Length: 473
Image (cartoon, rainbow, N blue to C red):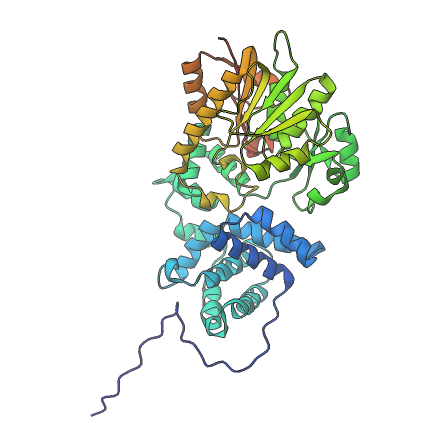
């Protein structure tokens, strides 16, 4: 009787290690290596892709088409991470939590190339296997090769048709997966828009697209027309200081106008919210302005430039010392004084004519600019932030003079962070809620008011929220 045991079936997710002899390490092209290194930084260190990648490209002197490809791969893979994980999970024999982290990031990068770029299938598979060998060893190459070939059996639309919940049963869930968003964020967008229909799909689709780059020309130093001519961009449709450039325009933080302090990288929606505060009517004095949450300094610089023209001064408050230094750099030569303090109790003398509260928030309105954020944020984050937001808005009203105006701004459409915070603080303090739409001239589709909610799909801006309040007592 033959009592030899049959060999156990190999686990496709955990391939056996093979004896490896000396070999030359595989050559991975610089763009894919850079994108992979960004994914690892995001996964292991909670790094921000939009801060990590530009520095990495500069350090490695990656430019031109390679830099553009690395940017597309890094940001695109981070943005689509949840969708890619669903597809990878459908091709694997066990949960992703059991998979080596580096191998999983390799597969995410490879799946993105297959499903969302024009990279040829053979090139995507071969380069992904090479990257797996370089980052995790030869023993994983068989598994990665097999996974990539399974993923390539369907295109993105076919995978979505297979994995998305039926729209007639779960419309929000269906749209969320198709636009690579967590379901809770899709629901927050639906509640803010008041619909789960075609406009929700349009909003989430716009949020899943690489945005244009927006610049703000410094008032009194350069005009938007001049800045557009220098940079090759187009004058923005709404902000008198805005310029828009295509998403592949490179690292404009290193461009000459930005280096020389003539312009700053700033979303047009942020510009409009700062201008709404400055344009709102106040009676009497108009010389003391306050930016209560100033870091990293974009709005403080815009306020400071306008204050210089109008004969006003600005106090800028930032709690974190390193961010306060960024504010100081941004407001060089402007009538702005930076204070390292907590905006809830900054120790400043009350009596400000205008106060800006650009409050910390979930950032759900800028997900397209922070590609990993949608998968990092959790619903539980909201309650702690709304308490902080209410405290900051209450502090701002306390620092304003009677008749002064306070602008409450968050980069989020979440109703708890917007309508909920403003109405509750106004009820407690007796502040008058103004119709903010009047301070957004020429901007269409602002709804019924009194608040302004901007949207990527309507306005081409981040989903910025702005409320204006007047102190009455």
